[in-house]
Length: 195
Image (cartoon, rainbow, N blue to C red; front, side, top):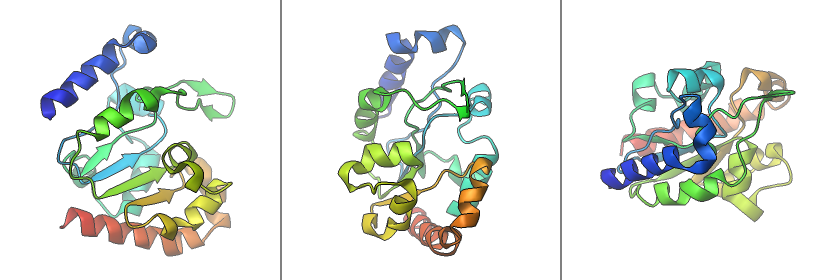
């Protein structure tokens, strides 16, 4: 399985749609191992993550690890967490933050990668892009409604708001998230990684 995962990574790097990233010296930013227990699906790496080649290497990542109740060593252990964004490359800056992940990118690679991860017990969907893609018709009309309905997706999936510092207003308006969803998330994560 490891060899197949290495082969897929080489295909991603060589793919025509990623020629621009090769020219910039970008590596695909994701982390997987065949025995991963939790899939963490986000949107796309930020500039800092792309430059450091470490996923979630920013304030959002610090907040996310706090929500998960794990330390850096656990979070970056690929046998625990498969970190798989909707696009593996920093998409660039837009008018109001980073650009969204490219359409069709996850279609090309996610299914093949996930097929190599045989021990997944939980999928965490961080943000609207991951939720729309993975929940499809089961997603609610808004991210807030989807996250507040988290219990409907348990025990195999849980949707989260993005932990970006830019979402502080959302978190202030929705105190139920820290009061209800975060404890449920921590409980699930602890159960999976200590099993």
